[in-house]
Image 1: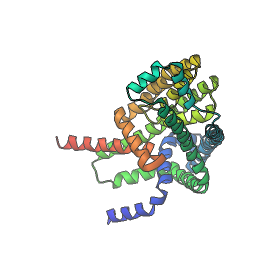
Image 2 (image 1 turned 120 degrees about the vertical axis):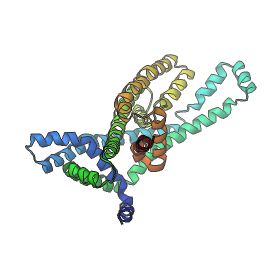
Image 3 (image 1 turned 45 degrees about the vertical axis):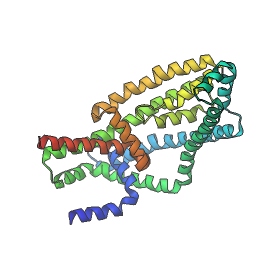
Image 4 (image 1 turned 30 degrees about the vertical axis):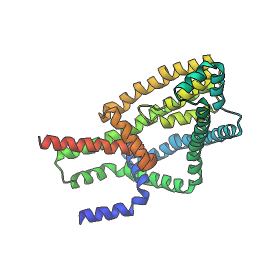
Length: 334
């Protein structure tokens, strides 16, 4: 009966699982702030929870919406320029081919590489990638009603999780029919991985996106805010991340004759942008999750493909719980 009731409730709540999940994760993340506010108000948890939700809305959501509007505006401009031919990255490969003719052409032909075909594919790929990234923001705008409903559902539930979260936790903890030490490990693993992944993704993405957008603006690359936001998004991939953006940009600059700018971008991307990931991610994510990088990468990719945007947190959480459960089995059945 317990299993049946749980499955039935899960089906009922399936449509709104994302605001529930995010309310839980954000509630865990901002619980220390709520407790600090509560201590300053001499034990008024309802008011402390309401002020915490208000602070999250004002200092997190509003700046994110403003940044999103800037990204959409620059994305539309960039997409229009690529489509109209004002910005033609494929022409840079043709310039490289003409610069080293006939030696380069003979070498490429000898190993079965057609630079003309590569040029067409590069231009098509950049057009499609910018169109895809732009479509993500535009689809979010088109589905604004559903987004706003889920957003306010999340805020509404977040208030109760902040206010009553400790009682909820104790009730679930007591009801779970596992030995106490195993329950403590699993609950702690969920909290640690959720917080570490969210904090790590936000901090690394913010830093790398800001650094990438800054160097693009300094070098005079069009759409600096747009490409900075794209780098912030792709930074969730631990192994490749922002190199997906700044490496092609550096190559285009170099083959286009802007050697100094290309080398500056290459050096900055290698020793500043990428190194910030190598420094920050282990500090924020690795030490808490205690998961190998390859498992974080594949669980993040799988989570994003299966669950959408929520998967970048839920994917590593599922992988961490998988490791924890099998660790418990190994310890209990050596």
